[in-house]
Image 1 (cartoon, rainbow, N blue to C red):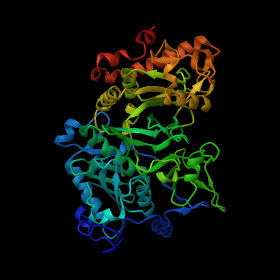
Image 2: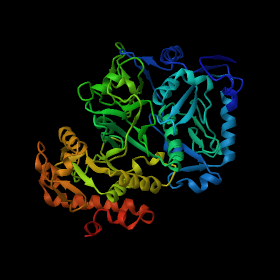
Image 3: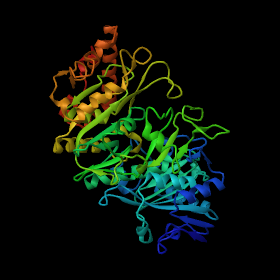
Image 4: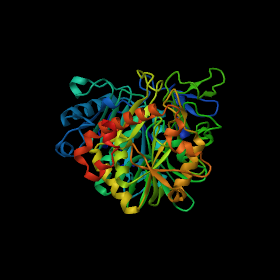
Length: 538
């Protein structure tokens, strides 16, 4: 077997059980990985120097193909209502078949860290079949100093073989596509999918499993910090503005997707960003556009002009989930440490397509836990196949349901405790519709959202007059300089007040119905933080 690159010779591929490999390329940088990827026809080069790859059938995660080994420990600890299981024997058979499949292959290996805080990071080794996958994961996780590589011993090992095909009967899975996690052995096996995001989310899932026991809350959120050290956290599902709103030129970006929150403050899990880039423009998001248009960026499923190789970010013909992966240091005002102090503000983002949530509301700690467990946003026609003309509510608990190995109440209780301990202000921000629901009203002006958010983060919003919302019970500011007062009370933006009342009551009912599954796990104070049950029943 041939080996290239810097590595720990005493802890090689054989320690994982890999044998009869043709070559292993260890810890290669972007230039070499570009070279191997282009030579193998895995990807093409854009006019700006980005590496552009297609992921084929799977243009996003496949949560139905993700499985966890059920053993004595996970049997008790896992949230099985949100996770699927296989037996230890089925995983062993899958592992053996992965090793067999890899024989004779050239593999790329990266030694990386998940987590910017040395006290809580997990040393991760990733073997990939494809050179561009190796560049992707090298970009998204945290890269050790070269001097650390000669002694690197992994705690978590991921092997990613898109050409592998699982056998549902033999392996206990659903299809030929598989993501299988064994927390006891700290192994992740990914096969059948060319979508690189599965690797990144596997590390996130693993940290989500281990960190709560160490007193750290793992979060699917972006984070930034102001010049006075005031950290802010932004929870939100896809399309709510999580990446856009945290990319603030007046604040330092800590990270755009995954963080931990513990006794020493907040830390990023990653060393890169993974931005949605459909309709990405230089005017609206200059930093993300610049980071996606240079050597070192990895673009997934973007359409290029055949002749010029210029990227057409507006073209969603392959998928609306086009992505750009780039190192964090491509953003000029990004943190170089990935760490910051205790948060002053927690922001929960919802794109309310029903148009009844106010543009901002202040939440009590109990209300914050309620809305965190709810994880509400709304989908609109055209964003997913099968959606009709009416908005559809989406509730993804803790704003990250697919990545939660433990019961959501574990994360909810941690959040509530951290908010109380550090006296954090919590806000619910509607980046969705105003003046009516989707199809009638219009999208919340980004100028209004930014003005309200700035006032929340600098503390000035604490000092204005608030009203109690009739439907949801949270506190809503009645006035803020520079923001039209009618927009702060959504009913005033609707022509048909009776229709507003009907729509608001309907959304209250949706919240109530969704939260029923958590009723038994939360205390009376959190149950009392729910939208008014009487209204929903009237």
